[in-house]
Length: 284
Image 1 (cartoon, rainbow, N blue to C red):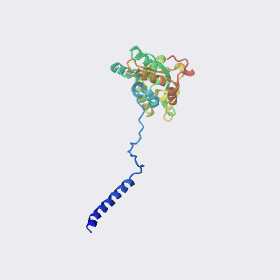
Image 2 (tube, rainbow, N blue to C red):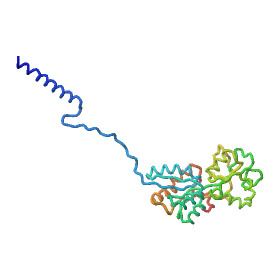
Image 3 (spheres, rainbow, N blue to C red):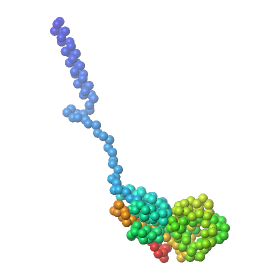
Image 4 (cartoon, one colour):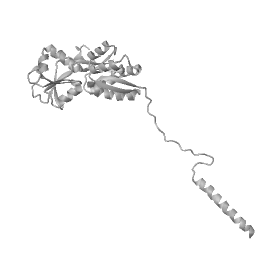
């Protein structure tokens, strides 16, 4: 009886030990002798960035360039930041800051200005900025030619001749027709960018404006073509700056924009692509 007294706790301890071992076996699906380690979730790292560039560009080029920036970044891993504005303003900014990698104004006139100041050197030609007469839907004022801009009583909207490519183009055409003073009497606004000029016209604030073909929204205004011989068609260039801190990326961006793939974005947004037989007589 005394032996049984000491045997009972021993039996109970043995049973408890067996149960513990069985429980441990039930909590693991791994084969005997193996260890299971929790694995972290698999993640896909973003494509490595090859830096970034800053592009000084005419405001009227925003639509195609925004799309080009996205496509270029996806293709080459180079981020593109834009500084949009009137070309005259951009040249001033580049002179003051000496920052930025690429310059793309609305015309070769502004590019030459930047070149004369040592800000850029070579360029490639991409598309045409074709001036057209924009009038309100239905042309209630019966405006048919640039000469009509001098007719008394009209409200005319123009781009700033010192800041925008379209402003400079208009000044040259009015001077050629000898109507500069008469037109000026009708001017109700001169905007610092062509985008603001387009908005002003689309809101019905003027009877007529000098815009470019790519800016015309046919649902809001009508466009009157200016014959090439009387027009001041602009050619849009692009080139790297002389003070770029990332010349490799800048040159790659210039080449991409001037390629067939890059030009296709301009065609999508209504720009005639350089070269075009229609404008063969236009001197860049």
